[in-house]
Length: 103
Ligand SMILES: [Cu+2]
Image (cartoon, rainbow, N blue to C red; front, side, top):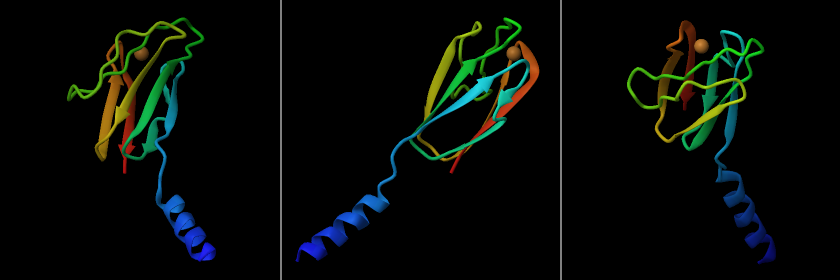
């Protein structure tokens, strides 16, 4: 009986996935990683780590997430609950693009 309970407990534990947080670093004109792969319920935190004191933002064209202009050292987070691919850019430097893939 104890063994059965232990087995059921281990099966339950193995099927529970915990929400995670992934950091995306904003360096000088790039998002690292450029493509972030996460699961539903996970949160992305963007950190502006620019060495050139460059302000940046994170802007999704569909309005799903948009940060303010972030000075060096600032951060912005968004929790993704729905599967999909979310593209974004920095409107101050439109060549800076990134993607969050929730699957
Ligand atoms: Cu920028």
